[in-house]
Length: 198
Image 1 (cartoon, rainbow, N blue to C red):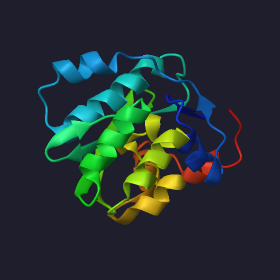
Image 2: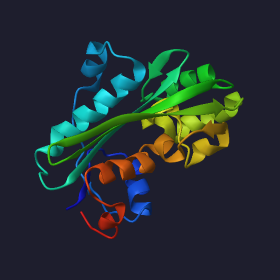
Image 3: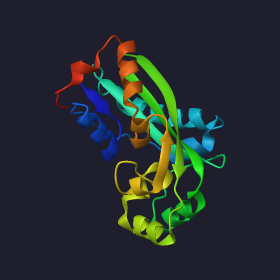
């Protein structure tokens, strides 16, 4: 039995590896834009639906394993923000969010032998009053371009986050406490996966 991560996120992989797990990496390819456009649910349910779609896309290929799907988005001024994808979009995003407080919502979907645990975790992020020069340099670094909220907590972005209130691992991309609870609900222990290679 293995943990399968339906994501290509290096941050999620790092969290699992730092926690003693060598996950199977099987990125799910879904049309996120279409799912977002069709969603009439609230922010938390929308992000969780994306996570479930990712896990569901690969779960049938791993019938005896635990499959994890995740998605993160920033709720800023009442609107969900995805990844900025470009330097220009990152600069605009940071100019809009500096000095503000927002919620980073990470949706989780964990599948094991036909059972599902789907849940979101919201963490409050206080963005610093970041200078224009630092915003430009951070955007040019490329680091935040594929990150929800256009920031990382564990790398260069740590300079620009004044505080967080909630689960730090969820901000990085995968709530380890939530994953532990999901495993327990399946009758499994976290320690069963320590040292296992994908």
